[in-house]
Length: 617
Image (cartoon, rainbow, N blue to C red; front, side):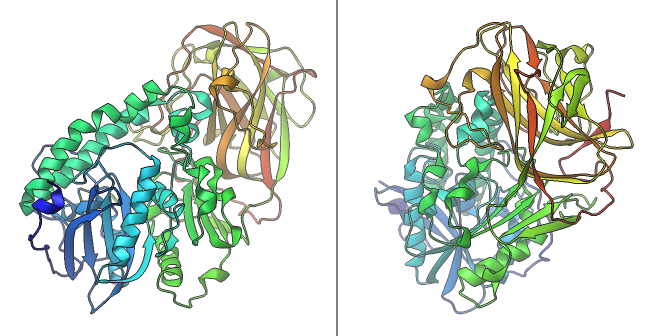
């Protein structure tokens, strides 16, 4: 017997209430799955009517949905939020308490704009039937079925868009790739388009910490859905959550990665960018350069889209900046144009907007809502052309425009480098960890002379390093920083590479190395023989002003944001070579036709780019 049968005849829950201020904040709470929530809501319902139920996919699996309808007669255009967290329970008890992975203020803004907001839980998650299996092709097919179900409902006018970020952004790529007829536009933010390269093993270095923490967070979201179901007397939903908690374990992401340590057919089946060339609807995308959850890499899926249907907003900062009110204005205008079909001129906007030195207010709970660029620039279309700027590694720890020279620089491995922007740090989550005794022996550092004119970098960068080890494999981390004239060092970007994974895909460019990353492309090192390893630094944009110096640190992979690595553990003496036969270098992308404000933002005000006192001074 299915959940739909069990629930047949049950009335849809309808709630009405007064709206609250659009910019109110609701901080998600990490919660034990089986805890009982407080009975006190932090907000009143802002919708005219709520509907809940189950939609049936093409193979008979039933997915839980919840709909928040705006005031008015209808029918309405709809915006779908589809993931494995708790979207199928939007509007329930936990949601009203702010205990949700959803953006309550975004839902409120959409409802106020006349959209029906629809949340659907992926199969095998929360109250939905089926077996959980992260990002398989079934995920996109279910998304197709959800879009077409929404379009067929009496409260819907048949026009459907998709919104939100992270998992709910990935759902948009997988769904739109299936081309459901009633999908009009998508707005994905902060996605994994190739989960292995973007998150599970960037550069081939396994990064299991985020996966472990994410699995716990996922279950806490099902706990929130359970609390709402208990409050609503939805016993089948409670039973399904209990069942999913058991059946998900054999397919947990941690187990999957143990079974598939290298790229194989199972890993490749989860690469969403393999299908994004099929996306035919307009796309508004957002990404954060220092995204501590998924990086800014996104497997470069934007390159597979039609440029005239892509609008992209990029910014420094973290994973949840999709919730910024500054971005929301653009998001609503995008949906009004392509879902409501209003003639608001959105299509005439620049296709690329880059927020620079993004900051926020100090008001508690408003970090993401109040995020705003200190300045910005635009480009008419994607991709953005840049000029490669080469800095060579040289003796005495120099980065220079002249050819490299000198003997190799040795450092001890593995000595984890400094952690940056982790939640567990005593700096409040966005600083640098303290230096451990003997840290200088575990790094190789190269610094440029003070710049005489502004250098505006944009896009990916490549650290092309000739490296040797005394063992058969080793991992390398490259950290790019700015050393300011006042002696403060500012984080810019990081990249990683397992040297056995150094063979490059033919798509690689001067600024973007792409490892082949297949089992048959892995090659061990010959001890003490140097090889060229090209380390990708994911997309970023940073203004190095006159008097500042550019620096790279080369060391063992360490904590960054939610990323925690398991590098090769065999002790080694690693060497960085930089003579005429081994031209190690840093290649940056430069923009020369942008006016950069002469004064930089103060240290520790730029989101996810913390400063510290220069440890080499």
